[in-house]
Amino acid sequence: MSEPTLSRRHVPSAALIHRRVPEGTGIVHLGLGNFHRAHQAVYTALAMEREPGPWGILGVASRSRAVADAMNAQDLLYSVVEISPEGSRVSVPGSHTGTLVAEQGPESVVRAIADPATKIVTITVTEHGYTVSPETGSLDLDSDAVRRDLAEVRTPRTTIGQIARGLARRASTHAAPITILSCDNLLSNGRQTERLVREFVGTFAPPLRDDMLSWMTSSVTFPNSMVDRIVPSGADRYNEAALAHLGVRDTIAVPAEPFTMWVMEERFAAGRPVWEHGGALFTDDVEPYELMKVRLLNGTHSLIAYLGALDGRATIPESVAQPFVEDAARRILCDEYLPTVTVPESVDTVDYIRQLFSRWSNTALGHRTSQVGSDGSVKLAQRIPIPALEHLGRGTVPQYLSLTVAAYLCCIAPLPGFDPGPHARSMTDPARPRLAGMADNAASTTEFVRSVFVDGGLFPSTLASHTEFVSRIADFVDIIVRHGPAVAAAEASDPDLGTITSLQSRATI
Image (spheres, rainbow, N blue to C red):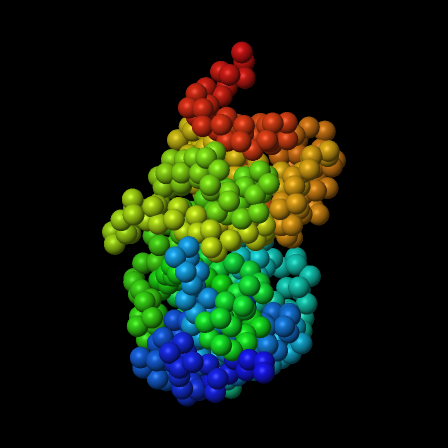
């Protein structure tokens, strides 16, 4: 007899977080991916286990029906498999009350956001999902998707369009307060989301525009938040782990590391679950936690992924096990990112860094370099410019920030004749076609890198005026192409190459 399918009837009670069906749907979540299911959904289940309430989650997938259909077939349940070298632990969060697929029912998403029962809209659509112009940091009004959403009142497709149209319907019907909570790796993610929504609403004709903006000021909050948990892509082996632990079949088990963190501002317009009982931290100032995470963790993670992929390494643990990758990671973290961050008083910096390397070395988790390295055109825009400008303003060329950009370009837009390897080729990036065209048409490496900063749409064009930074990136691209990433990392570690003055002197020899 085959094992039963995961359901509230068959799942072992000890593994099910929040055993009762949620009392109602108070949260609409945009982005029904692995991260949400292993992070916010778990916190919400733990909160409702401690204090029941109408905080069930309507999970909205962007395009694919696969996860939504599988959840519907499993009583809206799935397993979270926490993996470490010491073993695994399986739990089943029971926090969802329904699913939608935005692409197939965009009006349903608007209706859900406008529903008076909805108190919070949460978001995990990655940095790419906010349709931001990399040059201006504002809503990309030249984007075809944004233009379509501005023209189509009932069927928005972008995340910002869905939120703005949902709020507009809410304001024109019952006008109940609501909170929009971004859980993506954007600096000041709440403020950014609010600004983008206001820019969208600002295109409306008066008096709707003015009425909407006034109502948003009084009734809609956008707290900043910081989320942290490594969640790789799913695979059949995690379904097998769920079966071994639970004795029931799960087709969509989510792998995750044991570590998890969530920090938020206490700014909720219509109440919230008691997330602190799941371990969430509430504070008046999230920014130090955001900068710590986006730069120390995410920025360093990117360098590990690009160097590892170029070195033929499939996973982050395999990459950081290479001495040259570990050394580069420690140097960019301690020497180039850490000086640009004010670490919160509650965080022990030495212990935090030790914990990061332990997490990256989790061989049981097997986080793939191709996954971490994907969408770098959006991720690096959050991680590179401000730290780079700080160092350049002090007269220092940041060697490892330069190396990060160079390794990214070698992975995504290799120069003609250079093969970055299968793991780099597996990285997805919306800028790949554009950057590849620049690489193919450039007369020199320096011209290629300069064109990336001037016309690539990745970084603020102000960085292009720092010719020593552009030249250093071009140096590293050439070294990677000719000699490999290990030699490039060794070159970055040379202290004689640390200042603009020494670089200029070296160039004249």
